[in-house]
Length: 263
Image 1 (cartoon, rainbow, N blue to C red):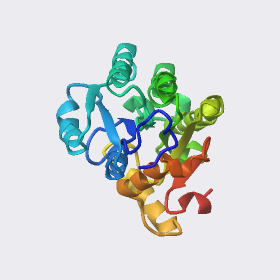
Image 2 (tube, rainbow, N blue to C red):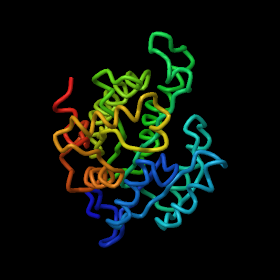
Image 3 (cartoon, helix red, strand yellow):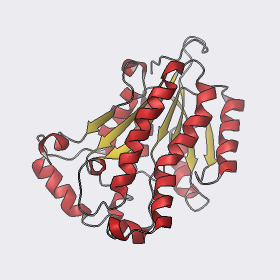
Image 4 (cartoon, helix red, strand yellow):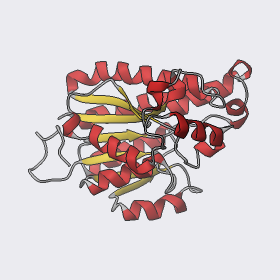
């Protein structure tokens, strides 16, 4: 896996990246991690808590992950411990994949106008500001350049029934990507977002009317088929590689063209 961050790395040494959001073998992060591993990347992965650990541990083993640690992004101490481990073991970080989102069920399933202040704040903190906190800690480890990627969805720019408060949250996430790209660009750190079409993940299954959304997307998209976690992973591996070294501050669609013919 070629990468722009080569100055501090011996020739032939694998790039090193952190994957945040690996939950199970149906998650977007799993599709991305598989593609990155197939291209020779050395990975560190996190699991949210002890309940999630049994689901993530076999996947981390399959990836040959060198570092497997707990990370609740609302706990600064866990984030600090993770980056201390990365610094101690690797001394650098070539890429960061941020693939996490959360909203309390009551706020997610209700109208945006009825959302609670606490629920909205939680969704924004976990799904958006966590990227800022991760990027802040990753920056010193990307002294020779690097790449950061997060996951978004078309509901950030158009109203998608059932997507609720995650629409405004993903809109904020995409704006955050642009600002981070501008601020970290002088350090040769790129920041982008992938906006995927509807993908049958366990997390997405919690959205209201998701089956209807998937059927509509498959019928409407120019390619007339849904994307898979593997196809999302291929796009992520490209954006995190040196082949995309002049792409930053962008939201790239991987949705069979659905965004081009809707709204």
